[in-house]
Length: 383
Ligand code: PMP
Image (tube, rainbow, N blue to C red; front, side):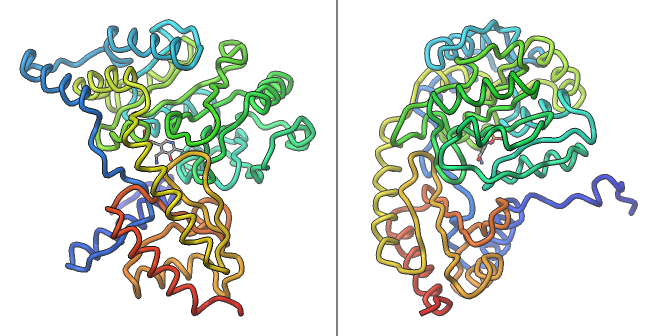
């Protein structure tokens, strides 16, 4: 069968590939503890479920909405942006997408031509690089510093597009207002367009979330901000998020989205308009915080792993550079021998680290998984 050269030269997302291995083993009847991605064990917030049930009962027929999303839903999202993010936007500057992933693809497709450069900080969410490769862009990887300063930014050249992930997967870094101000001034000066992925805006333990769009002239610079219901409201499978962008970018994204998926599913749009109005689910955040603290306490005893408590997010990012094997080898051996899946840092652009999503299983299973990692790693620790 002919497979186009375009896709034959691309590889599946590393995260999807590892999750596929987990599913294969599970289908063979081998239980696996999966830390490779973060799938919340919480359901969608109650008000979301109630609103969706009511919509199904009342409406029964779910129409196609306009490609950008139903107007009342976009008006609700504009109200959320005003209230939570301090951004004044009109519904014409919002497009509802099938998750942030679709928003990312559409924003890059719309704002960049093949060959354009795209600055991505590492470690990075794998989809940034995978998407840029699908579109023939040239990713430039730069280490994410502990603090973004004007001097650091001046050393980064002149990329066409800059991707910021705030709060950051996998390190949990929450950008400060000052750092965002430096970023805004720099991109305005060099004429780069920006994509800011704020999918984890509510999963913050320390610090507060600031939207880049609240600090700059986002229409003039060309800033697209991506939001997602997946992580902030535990709604991964609902496949819904939205993008805030200048109206002409929204129009262009719509031209692309129309023939591919049309609008996001109407039910998920209804769900999103309620979810984004509910704020951070408190019980969920309390649960995540407890798990995070438990994990950090456990790993603090282990000499070959260095792990700081993340300020945000559902991941732990462990420095295991002292091990005597590379992290791809470590992850492969760990899943085969101990039935525990982790994401090797290579997949996120930084070998020598592992990422653990800690929000999926119950706490005893979580502890059992950590125990197996610690026991397994001991054999490769340089004593
Ligand atoms: N952005 C980042 C950085 C993520 O890690 C995730 C979840 N893995 C998302 C976005 C969510 O994407 P989506 O809305 O397509 O589920």
